[in-house]
Length: 198
Ligand SMILES: [Zn+2]
Image (tube, rainbow, N blue to C red; front, side, top):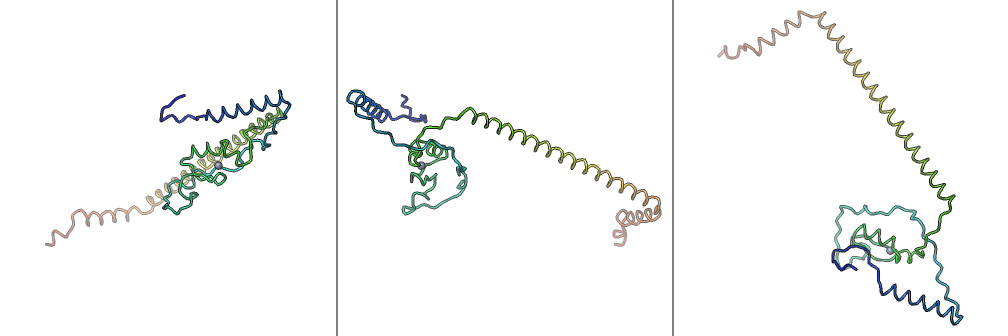
């Protein structure tokens, strides 16, 4: 067993498991040799899938003032209301709610119901269907995007053409005014009379 302080691997309590094994052995010996029936184990529910999303992020980036009177459920970190304990970070919180102690407090054993072949097949089919739906949605999205882009291009083209036409009309209709205007501008800003007046 490693004794490194930074070792984050899961540890097993040897003494606890040894005593459990010993108890089991004693019970078996008692049953076989002395004819004493084994104590029926506490019947617990099979392990169930979570039907809610674990909230790990709602308190991210928030500050909370904590004093001595603050109940432990509000001291920051992740609070488990089933076990009434606070866990410091999300990884350990997930470990906790997936762990034996928490599941036992929920009234569940760590045993998992064995799936039948039909259940597995059904799951495969469902996943495949989901994947196909996703692809179809994506195709549709792509098509809509392309149509929009095309429409945008046509609009742009029409706008340019309208401008062109307008320019041509202006050029053919008012050539003199344009020249006059130009001259006026030149006279004003080019060889201004303000200096000459002084
Ligand atoms: Zn818990």
